[in-house]
Length: 327
Image (tube, rainbow, N blue to C red; front, side, top):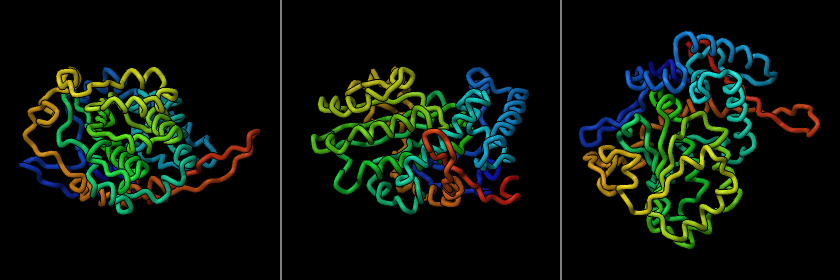
C-alpha cells in the first residue's frame, strides 16, 4: 500500500516503539469508520471517485506548464478528498498548493527533514501517538516555556509544521478524517509575542485556508496567558469565517477541551487518560528522515513566466518520476 501512496516509490518505513505502541506512518487501508466518514462527508463512492479522477486529470492536462504525476491516482485523491471530489475545486487547490510554494520560495526551497533537525531537537512540535475519537491526527505546537525563541525561530517551527502536514497528507485515514491542531501557549512571554509579525500571521492563515490539501478540522488554544491576545490580534484580520469558527480557546479549562477531544486520546497534563508517553519530536524525525526523497519529489520546482496583464508568475512543477514509481 505504501508504494501506491508515495511519489518516490518507497514501500516501507521504519517504526518506533513507544510504551508498547508503534509510532509509524499509517499507509494502510482505511478503517470501516473512515470509509463511512468518506461516504457521508466527502461523497466518496466508487463511481464518484472514478469520474472525479478522470475529470481532474483532464483539467490538469489543459494547464500549460503544470506538470503533475497524472497517472498516480493516489496523488490525485490527495486533492480530491479535501475538496469533496469536486474536480474544479481540486484543480484550484493544486494550483494554490504550488503557487503558495512559489510565493514563499525562501521557505520551501530545499525543505526536507535533514535540513530542519534543530526544530525536532528542541521538541516544540510533535504528533500525539493516538488519533482523536474522530480518527484525526493530533499535531501539537508548544509556543510557551518549552520554546526557546532565541534558538528556534518561528520560521523553523513553521517549516516543521509543513513537514508534519506533508507526511500526514500521505495517510489515507488522515486525508479522510483530517487533523486537529493544539497550540499550547503555557508560559508565553512578552519577548516571544514580539516574534510574531503580520506577514508571518498572513502566511500561516493563507496556508491553512487555501493552500494545504488537508482537512484541518479544529484548532485548540490552551494554557494561553492574557498577552496571547496580542498574538491573536495579528491573525484575526486574515481569518475567514470557516477557519475562525474552528478555533477554540480553552485556557486551563480541561473540561472545555474535553467537549471536543476525548480524554482517552490526551495526556495527563491535558486532563487525559492516555497512558502512552508523548513522543519526542526526534522520534518522529527518525521516521520522517526516510521520507527525504518524497519531500524532494514534491519540491522539485521551476518557475517560468506567464504573460498576463499583471505579469504574474505561476509555479511550474516538474515531477521527474519514473514509470515504475507511478505504479
